[in-house]
Image (cartoon, rainbow, N blue to C red; front, top):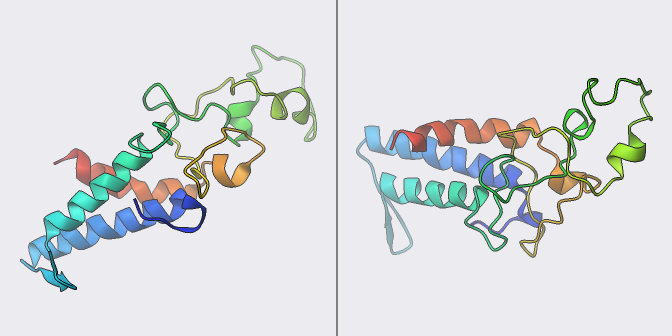
Length: 159
């Protein structure tokens, strides 16, 4: 696992995308390169990308999948309005823009809706994930995290 600022999975997914993209290029060009005294082949990069994906999906110190709905231990309190608010069927009363804070945003209960497949920001510098929706930098499933992992997941699923 790359150690980057606050282990933000934005960097991990972006680097994983770069690793798989460059590995495909190297394979088609029948290319390798040296990094110090290490021979880097396409499989070297693919294996590193796989380790990154495995980390995201639960091979990490917390044994937690940072992909919501994947496995049994995943974030339950993500910073996502649609996930944290109840459906109209359960809560037919309307509430304004600020009306969702109490009792939904500040509750310690899991989100009523599971945003399956979303990857959150990830753990802090100590590889700890508090699973608190108020900690948006770690619990928000942003597009810049999720978009970058689509290609590597597709690539690795075919291997």
